[in-house]
Image 1 (cartoon, rainbow, N blue to C red):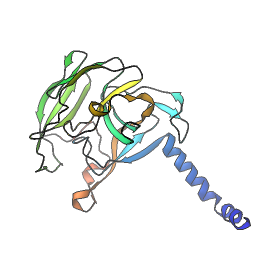
Image 2 (tube, helix red, strand yellow):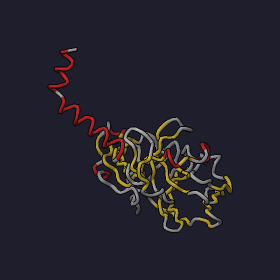
Image 3 (cartoon, rainbow, N blue to C red):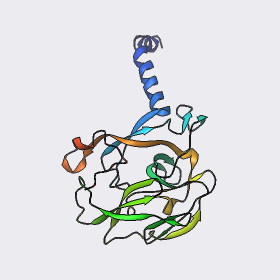
Image 4 (spheres, rainbow, N blue to C red):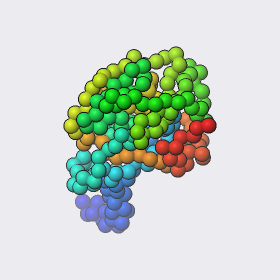
Length: 229
Protein backbone atom coordinates (compact mmCIF):
# COMPACT_ATOMS: atom_id res chain seq x y z
CA UNK A 1 0.00 0.00 0.00
CA UNK A 2 2.82 2.40 0.92
CA UNK A 3 4.55 1.71 -2.42
CA UNK A 4 1.30 2.34 -4.30
CA UNK A 5 0.75 5.65 -2.51
CA UNK A 6 4.36 6.63 -3.21
CA UNK A 7 3.92 5.80 -6.93
CA UNK A 8 0.74 7.88 -7.12
CA UNK A 9 2.41 10.78 -5.35
CA UNK A 10 5.40 10.76 -7.70
CA UNK A 11 3.18 10.63 -10.80
CA UNK A 12 0.22 12.72 -9.71
CA UNK A 13 0.90 15.30 -12.43
CA UNK A 14 0.60 12.63 -15.12
CA UNK A 15 -2.64 11.28 -13.68
CA UNK A 16 -4.14 14.76 -13.38
CA UNK A 17 -3.22 15.41 -17.02
CA UNK A 18 -4.75 12.12 -18.16
CA UNK A 19 -7.94 12.76 -16.19
CA UNK A 20 -8.20 16.24 -17.68
CA UNK A 21 -7.65 14.95 -21.21
CA UNK A 22 -10.25 12.19 -20.80
CA UNK A 23 -12.74 14.66 -19.35
CA UNK A 24 -12.14 17.05 -22.25
CA UNK A 25 -12.66 14.28 -24.81
CA UNK A 26 -15.78 13.06 -23.05
CA UNK A 27 -17.52 16.41 -22.64
CA UNK A 28 -16.14 18.88 -25.19
CA UNK A 29 -14.32 17.50 -28.21
CA UNK A 30 -13.03 14.19 -29.53
CA UNK A 31 -12.09 12.43 -32.74
CA UNK A 32 -13.77 9.39 -34.22
CA UNK A 33 -12.38 6.75 -36.59
CA UNK A 34 -14.67 5.93 -39.54
CA UNK A 35 -14.25 2.22 -40.44
CA UNK A 36 -17.11 1.83 -42.96
CA UNK A 37 -18.13 3.48 -46.25
CA UNK A 38 -21.68 4.34 -45.14
CA UNK A 39 -21.03 8.10 -45.43
CA UNK A 40 -19.10 8.07 -48.71
CA UNK A 41 -18.31 10.21 -50.55
CA UNK A 42 -18.48 12.82 -47.77
CA UNK A 43 -16.49 10.73 -45.30
CA UNK A 44 -14.00 8.14 -46.52
CA UNK A 45 -12.94 4.90 -44.86
CA UNK A 46 -9.92 5.74 -42.74
CA UNK A 47 -10.95 9.30 -41.96
CA UNK A 48 -10.53 10.52 -38.38
CA UNK A 49 -13.23 13.15 -37.96
CA UNK A 50 -13.36 15.87 -35.32
CA UNK A 51 -16.43 15.65 -33.08
CA UNK A 52 -17.74 18.81 -31.43
CA UNK A 53 -19.37 17.36 -28.32
CA UNK A 54 -20.49 20.80 -27.15
CA UNK A 55 -22.42 21.54 -30.34
CA UNK A 56 -25.78 20.66 -28.79
CA UNK A 57 -25.24 20.12 -25.05
CA UNK A 58 -22.75 20.50 -22.24
CA UNK A 59 -22.89 17.05 -20.64
CA UNK A 60 -21.71 15.53 -17.40
CA UNK A 61 -18.36 13.95 -18.36
CA UNK A 62 -18.50 10.22 -19.15
CA UNK A 63 -22.34 10.27 -19.31
CA UNK A 64 -25.17 11.30 -21.66
CA UNK A 65 -26.67 13.55 -18.97
CA UNK A 66 -27.11 17.09 -20.31
CA UNK A 67 -26.17 19.94 -17.96
CA UNK A 68 -26.83 22.80 -20.40
CA UNK A 69 -28.93 22.52 -23.56
CA UNK A 70 -27.36 24.66 -26.29
CA UNK A 71 -29.07 23.65 -29.53
CA UNK A 72 -30.74 20.81 -31.39
CA UNK A 73 -29.48 18.97 -34.48
CA UNK A 74 -30.60 20.54 -37.74
CA UNK A 75 -31.42 18.95 -41.07
CA UNK A 76 -28.16 18.34 -42.92
CA UNK A 77 -25.94 18.07 -39.81
CA UNK A 78 -23.47 15.18 -39.67
CA UNK A 79 -23.87 13.71 -36.20
CA UNK A 80 -22.10 11.10 -34.10
CA UNK A 81 -24.26 8.98 -31.83
CA UNK A 82 -24.00 6.09 -29.41
CA UNK A 83 -26.78 3.95 -30.86
CA UNK A 84 -28.53 1.44 -28.62
CA UNK A 85 -30.30 -0.10 -31.63
CA UNK A 86 -27.04 -0.67 -33.53
CA UNK A 87 -25.05 -1.36 -30.34
CA UNK A 88 -22.20 0.79 -31.64
CA UNK A 89 -21.17 4.34 -32.44
CA UNK A 90 -22.59 5.64 -35.73
CA UNK A 91 -21.91 8.63 -37.99
CA UNK A 92 -24.93 9.71 -40.06
CA UNK A 93 -26.63 12.75 -41.56
CA UNK A 94 -29.77 14.31 -40.07
CA UNK A 95 -32.56 14.13 -42.65
CA UNK A 96 -35.71 14.36 -40.53
CA UNK A 97 -36.17 16.44 -37.37
CA UNK A 98 -39.11 16.10 -34.95
CA UNK A 99 -42.42 16.70 -36.73
CA UNK A 100 -41.08 16.14 -40.26
CA UNK A 101 -42.89 13.78 -42.62
CA UNK A 102 -40.24 11.88 -44.58
CA UNK A 103 -40.52 9.47 -47.50
CA UNK A 104 -38.30 8.05 -50.22
CA UNK A 105 -39.30 6.88 -53.69
CA UNK A 106 -36.60 5.19 -55.78
CA UNK A 107 -33.95 7.03 -53.74
CA UNK A 108 -35.65 10.39 -54.22
CA UNK A 109 -36.09 12.03 -50.83
CA UNK A 110 -39.31 13.81 -49.81
CA UNK A 111 -39.59 15.94 -46.69
CA UNK A 112 -42.96 17.46 -45.78
CA UNK A 113 -44.22 16.73 -49.28
CA UNK A 114 -41.36 18.49 -51.09
CA UNK A 115 -38.98 16.46 -53.25
CA UNK A 116 -35.23 16.99 -53.07
CA UNK A 117 -33.50 18.17 -56.24
CA UNK A 118 -30.67 16.14 -57.78
CA UNK A 119 -27.88 16.81 -60.25
CA UNK A 120 -25.07 14.48 -61.40
CA UNK A 121 -21.61 14.98 -59.95
CA UNK A 122 -18.10 13.66 -60.49
CA UNK A 123 -16.18 12.94 -57.29
CA UNK A 124 -12.40 13.01 -57.08
CA UNK A 125 -10.15 11.30 -54.56
CA UNK A 126 -12.18 8.10 -54.14
CA UNK A 127 -11.06 5.02 -56.12
CA UNK A 128 -13.69 3.17 -58.13
CA UNK A 129 -15.11 0.06 -56.45
CA UNK A 130 -15.09 -2.47 -59.28
CA UNK A 131 -17.35 -4.82 -57.30
CA UNK A 132 -19.86 -2.08 -56.56
CA UNK A 133 -19.62 0.73 -59.12
CA UNK A 134 -21.65 3.81 -58.35
CA UNK A 135 -22.79 7.19 -59.56
CA UNK A 136 -22.74 10.36 -57.50
CA UNK A 137 -25.34 13.09 -57.24
CA UNK A 138 -25.76 16.34 -55.35
CA UNK A 139 -28.88 16.23 -53.19
CA UNK A 140 -30.44 19.64 -52.45
CA UNK A 141 -33.33 20.51 -50.19
CA UNK A 142 -33.75 23.97 -48.69
CA UNK A 143 -30.44 24.88 -47.10
CA UNK A 144 -29.22 21.26 -47.15
CA UNK A 145 -26.80 20.34 -49.93
CA UNK A 146 -24.44 17.36 -50.06
CA UNK A 147 -23.20 14.50 -52.20
CA UNK A 148 -24.76 11.04 -52.17
CA UNK A 149 -23.52 7.74 -53.59
CA UNK A 150 -25.89 5.42 -55.48
CA UNK A 151 -24.88 1.87 -56.44
CA UNK A 152 -25.37 1.07 -60.12
CA UNK A 153 -26.02 -2.66 -59.87
CA UNK A 154 -26.71 -3.36 -56.20
CA UNK A 155 -29.48 -0.97 -55.19
CA UNK A 156 -30.71 -1.19 -51.61
CA UNK A 157 -34.12 -2.69 -50.92
CA UNK A 158 -34.70 0.38 -48.74
CA UNK A 159 -34.71 2.91 -51.60
CA UNK A 160 -38.46 3.20 -50.96
CA UNK A 161 -40.02 3.91 -47.56
CA UNK A 162 -42.63 5.98 -45.79
CA UNK A 163 -44.11 8.42 -45.45
CA UNK A 164 -43.25 8.39 -41.76
CA UNK A 165 -43.60 11.16 -39.19
CA UNK A 166 -40.58 11.80 -36.98
CA UNK A 167 -41.74 11.69 -33.33
CA UNK A 168 -40.89 14.29 -30.71
CA UNK A 169 -37.40 13.77 -29.30
CA UNK A 170 -36.38 11.55 -32.22
CA UNK A 171 -34.43 12.01 -35.47
CA UNK A 172 -34.36 10.29 -38.85
CA UNK A 173 -30.77 9.73 -39.94
CA UNK A 174 -29.42 8.44 -43.27
CA UNK A 175 -25.99 7.69 -44.67
CA UNK A 176 -24.79 9.53 -47.78
CA UNK A 177 -23.91 6.14 -49.28
CA UNK A 178 -27.59 5.46 -49.76
CA UNK A 179 -27.36 1.85 -50.93
CA UNK A 180 -24.80 0.83 -48.31
CA UNK A 181 -25.78 2.33 -44.97
CA UNK A 182 -27.35 0.89 -41.84
CA UNK A 183 -29.50 3.83 -40.77
CA UNK A 184 -33.07 4.81 -39.88
CA UNK A 185 -34.45 2.71 -42.72
CA UNK A 186 -33.33 -0.37 -40.80
CA UNK A 187 -32.90 0.81 -37.19
CA UNK A 188 -35.79 3.26 -36.86
CA UNK A 189 -35.68 6.74 -35.37
CA UNK A 190 -32.78 7.71 -33.13
CA UNK A 191 -33.40 9.37 -29.74
CA UNK A 192 -32.04 12.86 -29.18
CA UNK A 193 -30.06 11.81 -26.10
CA UNK A 194 -28.01 9.30 -28.16
CA UNK A 195 -26.59 12.09 -30.34
CA UNK A 196 -23.32 13.08 -28.71
CA UNK A 197 -21.92 15.62 -31.15
CA UNK A 198 -21.59 17.14 -34.61
CA UNK A 199 -18.74 16.78 -37.09
CA UNK A 200 -17.64 19.29 -39.72
CA UNK A 201 -13.95 18.55 -40.28
CA UNK A 202 -11.53 15.71 -40.96
CA UNK A 203 -8.68 15.67 -38.46
CA UNK A 204 -6.56 13.06 -40.24
CA UNK A 205 -7.07 10.42 -42.90
CA UNK A 206 -5.15 7.16 -43.35
CA UNK A 207 -5.62 5.19 -46.58
CA UNK A 208 -6.20 1.47 -45.82
CA UNK A 209 -5.55 0.61 -49.48
CA UNK A 210 -2.07 2.19 -49.35
CA UNK A 211 -0.66 0.70 -46.15
CA UNK A 212 -2.40 3.41 -44.10
CA UNK A 213 -0.33 6.22 -45.57
CA UNK A 214 -1.77 9.66 -44.81
CA UNK A 215 -4.08 11.28 -47.31
CA UNK A 216 -2.60 14.74 -47.11
CA UNK A 217 -5.41 16.29 -49.18
CA UNK A 218 -7.89 15.20 -46.48
CA UNK A 219 -6.06 16.92 -43.62
CA UNK A 220 -8.44 19.48 -42.15
CA UNK A 221 -10.95 19.01 -44.98
CA UNK A 222 -14.44 20.38 -44.45
CA UNK A 223 -17.11 17.71 -44.61
CA UNK A 224 -19.59 20.06 -46.28
CA UNK A 225 -17.31 20.71 -49.23
CA UNK A 226 -16.48 17.32 -50.72
CA UNK A 227 -14.39 17.52 -53.90
CA UNK A 228 -16.56 17.85 -57.01
CA UNK A 229 -15.53 18.59 -60.54
